[in-house]
Image 1 (cartoon, rainbow, N blue to C red):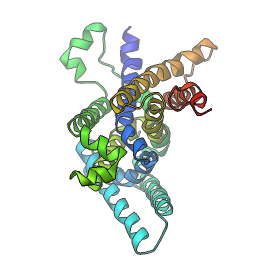
Image 2: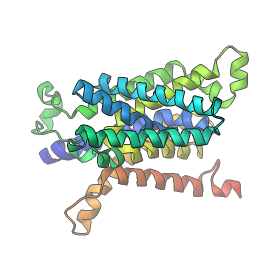
Image 3: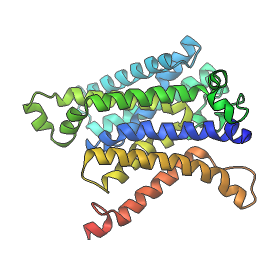
Image 4: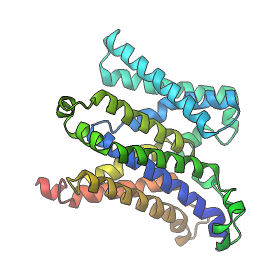
Amino acid sequence: MTSFLQIDLPAMLVGTLAALVCALIGNFLVLTRQSMLGDAMGHVVLPGIVIAFVLAGTTATWVMLTGAFAAALFSAMLVEFLRRMAGVEPSAALGAVFTAMFALGVLLLEQSGVARTTFDVHHILFGNIETAIWPAAAGIRSLFDLAALASLPPQLGRLAFGLVVVALIIVLLFKELRVVSFDPDFARTIGISPRMIGALIVSLAALAAVVSLSAVGVILLVAMMVCPPATARMLTDDLRTQVLLSLLFALASGVFGYAIAVLLPLAFGYEISLGAAGTIAVVAGLFQLAAMLFGPKRGIPRTA
């Protein structure tokens, strides 16, 4: 039990919390046909995070958020410049900007020396879930010991903060988000600004990317923003039900994905586990595949 609490529980919580926060905002990205915005965010915020880390010398949440939002704002302005002033097609402008920003982030990682820490290119792409350990855990009583809880991995604090903020804003503005997601023209006639709500969705996606990126990597970030919401969308037409189902699929992906990553190699006699972030993403993809094949609303049987 102590070994589970020290090694497996915090890593599983990191993967699951990241899946939840990404899936939550991912519902509105899917509905507004911006599913790949999560991929773009995972790329464009990297140089901002690295610069903020180098200048401040800390990975505190507010430092990473400041750098990430600055990079996201700069990228948005650059995309608009390419669209309006250079006449570049929107998707081409977005693709050029986020790949260039990611390349800049990788270059800054290598040249600044940050890549020699745990915050390197490999972990940005594939995640760093396995390093989330809790050495102070000494049994079940540690779950109720404030001193022991204070030594939990810092990734958990960032992810919990992001999840609470995203959930609170979605609850408070659920009506506005729903109207804009399904009928922006109607939203405009009743005084709701689709542009402001769209900016809010982008901001929440950036927040989810920042709190998740260093812990779970770009691959899991994108998978969780797309797969659980898209899976839920194939099962229901009700938005509230869709959001709840997406959280359920994200939770199941995090728990079962991590369990498979650890236990499956052991079952075949291997001592080295699979990559947790990749396995969680694969499980989320399998849920998506099952919904495509058997979904009662939009699956293949319904389409046929």
